[in-house]
Image: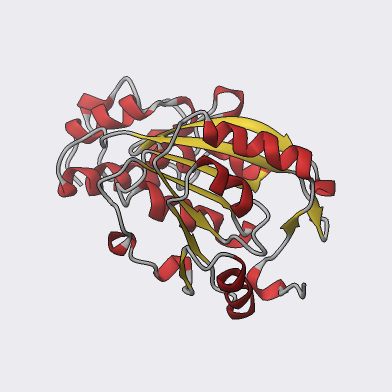
Length: 247
């Protein structure tokens, strides 16, 4: 199987570990699964044991041709996932899980797209370890990534995956994360956009305090926050801040 560096392809190659990874998905007992970037179908064959209602999204034309021969019963979209409209998925009324070993270079964009689609109850993704740590508030410190993501989903780190599980081997460790969707912490598109803007602005200079990063908006109502660094605030703190200032 020819690999394409432009697509960030690293194919999984550890059957025992693959079985363990898929076991986390199986515990959720999904009625429907969407797999992003199935490659040659290494995880696909295992996901099919969980449910026959499996949909694949794969950009590589050659891989799609092989997948359609191997799995003629499945719906396979030959599309770039970043351009994919999840609303056209079949059986949207069913509880649906998303799974994928994601290209490192676009993993954050894919995850953002998935959590904000409101399509999936749960998501299981294999991504770069350092990025996974950013999603889970490593060392009890917030990041712009974890705080923004927490608006839509809760995230857990399930396992670290060493380079030897892939072919070719990446130069960094990977991780399996589990995201569980929930309703946005604040209602209304405008309020969500305001909250996101405040979070992004607060992390403009992560090592500086909110007095510096939000100096255009600070007032006496924010006195208890102004001397705190953005990494030491929770999403609930940012929600309160958004209710105290105008942006």
